[in-house]
Amino acid sequence: MTYITLGNLTMSLYTMQKFFFALNRDVEVQRRYQQDGKERAKLLDTFELTDEEREAIDRGDIGKIYVLGCNGQLLMHFAALLGMPWADYISAMREGVHKFGPVRAGIYTMTTSQDDRIAGV
Image (cartoon, rainbow, N blue to C red; front, side, top):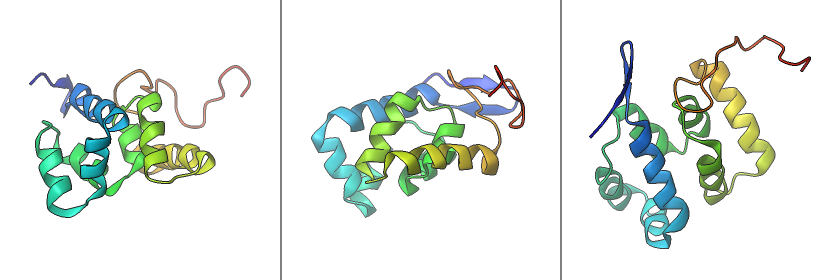
């Protein structure tokens, strides 16, 4: 397994995103995730996730998963699977940044502070 290392931060971002890719496309993976308990645990065991990633996925913590670097195109389908309306999904990502800090890796890595205005926005 290849992990991305940034200073003292190590994560299996690629594996986490592979999990969401599978979840978004495979009804059997969706069924197993929705089972909770032992079935969900066995499913998550098949992916080499960090404890932090696994806990966030298990709890359906959109904000934390976003901050860990998951691609929004993959994450939005997970939010839909959880029954989360679009506005709540967007809010959950924003709340994740406020609660857990800037996005740590991936294409959404934050290079500005939360209060910076970019292009007048």
